[in-house]
Length: 615
Image (cartoon, rainbow, N blue to C red; front, side, top):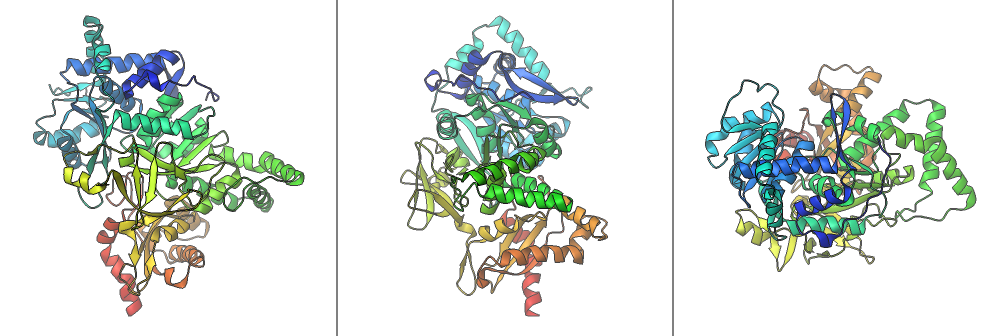
């Protein structure tokens, strides 16, 4: 991969819509590399000028197909270059773009296309096209489907379906006939027009379409540029779903603004291989990825020689001296600085390279709570992990830990141009130019979410004297035990997820005599542990039922329980014996367990923890 590079900053005075920002960047960076993706195992680079030609063809092709400004185009695909090309092309043509998760079912595709009023759909391949074909009778407004990968569709002939290559050819012909077509569409854009629809994961009902204007998105990107370190951005990875607000803002639009080179991962199974291959300069990931990277190091250390384990412990202790307990940098005496230099040179640098993060200058975590101890571990390793907080309705982030002043456990301070306060009920409220336009087709829900111009986030929190905010929990997730004790389950859950053997957990106990929890194990690490300890299993279910594995998780729970008061300790637990993936309804797109759905779906398993104690 190329080394980090600098880019001339884009002037925000030169654009007021997302596609105008892109085309301004094309004019300034024409021959620089914009993105990469593998073809047959080899990285293929695309320069800004080249992507500009593709995006212009997409925009003109869509216009030729009859797409009107303000109409909605949906994208049903994994995160890849075509997703971004389609998004930028549709936006250039004046459309609104809505993403659909590639793991969604045909009925979900039908609902999202119908609710958004989509008139065109980009589909990744035959598998995604089949979802549309199964429900096409329910989508009379959807006029055309464009397919990226036509493998398996050579003999398929349908007037409502065409290939992505055919769309590009159509666009080239339209541009030849009307040279000013794309420029005219681009100039007609408005900052306050609807640009992006992001459907929030519906844990208690149908997903809601959050409406984000061009101004919302641009302000979010410009605020990040103003707040985050003004260092070289260089290489970054795109692997989270582009339907999710995190990757859409930070991975696509902020990368356009900053000039980062975006590298698209091959597939979800190659993420950690690709990290080592790309060695990104900027890396945004959800807590589950940061936890997995930590687990890989923990397991490797356990398998190392006694000398290697000693060297790791010694080096990590030297690294921990560089930050105080509150995360602030500390001035070290000469002897400690020398020790730290040796630790970095001999050990910690090798650990960072093994993870693929030796070059990272900007590390960000968001979309879910993360353990403060995990942030401290990364800081000791030499990686400052910035925790930010936000939501779809805020077009990304509202707070972030400032560079050089990170406080583990805190979600940071309010971003520039953003107001955050705590209501009398303890709920965090947000006001600012990046707060969304409202929910599509749901005026009552929009009114319920807004209070006197402030967005009600649903998160319970507090703020300290220095302006750092702390999330206690979701308002709807607070547990009140039968004894009247208020418990915030996320704090306990985050500590358990620090274990290399646990992927996620849900604490149970509302109106119950004591706390219990359901645990989802880390399959790879637990399988490896089982093999090393001669524990026999045939599949994932039998692994979870193994008394040795249950005892292993029990030891991890006992370790966490020691950190909490007796009333906040877990008295019983069960392992979820079904291997859950992105397509399962129990998980959010960012791979978090949905608390309410888990409570409902595993109610019998939960009851068994209380019946067993009674018996």
